Amino acid sequence: MKQFVCFFLILALGSSTFKKTENDNLGTNDISKTISQSFKVGNSDLLSTCFNKEIELIIDGDKIEFQKLPSNSAKSILNSFFKKNPPLSFNYVYQGNSSTTLKYCIGNYKSKTSDFFVYMLIKKNNNDKFLISTIQLKKG
Image (cartoon, rainbow, N blue to C red):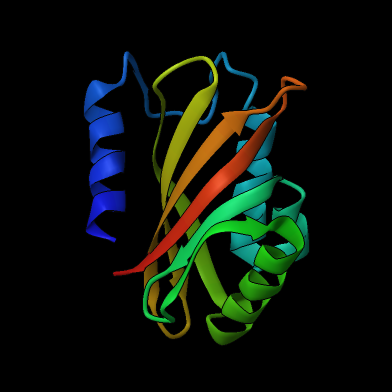
């Protein structure tokens, strides 16, 4: 878990371009909006439209840690997460990129029961489409 957080810090510090806005030149504005909307309403179906075929999913507190999880399994796990932690709000704290093919986002997810930091890696696939490859939810 500590290694994963360190990975995000290294990306942030080593990034060649820093941005603190949802608009960027990587064409990820649409996926950013979809991700934000899905967390705001707790919709794992909508969020899963942004998943790569396999994703890394880590949920702190529930002791869930998968490195290569099929997207349909991740959708089911996140559906349970949203039921257990109904949303109150979601907002991005930071968005950046370390290359034209890799983007990272940090957000705050507030639920009725707990608050979570949301860390995501979004990678461009072979079809030039940005998809989520990693989601980590860390209890705040």
